Image 1 (cartoon, helix red, strand yellow):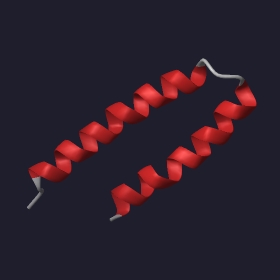
Image 2 (cartoon, helix red, strand yellow; image 1 turned 120 degrees about the horizontal axis):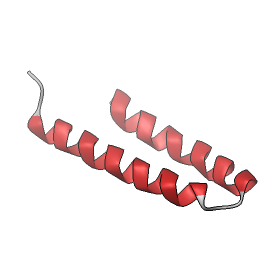
Image 3 (cartoon, one colour; image 1 turned 135 degrees about the horizontal axis):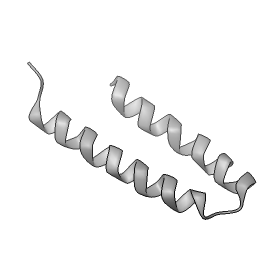
Length: 49
């Protein structure tokens, strides 16, 4: 059974990730990619848990 709380958390994480990506797109390219890779790991960690 899929937990609604898990679903809500996933949606929240996704919207945050989208906002972060949009913000990073405005940054200088090298720093943006670096930060992007650092952010990907915690997000993937949350989803595999």
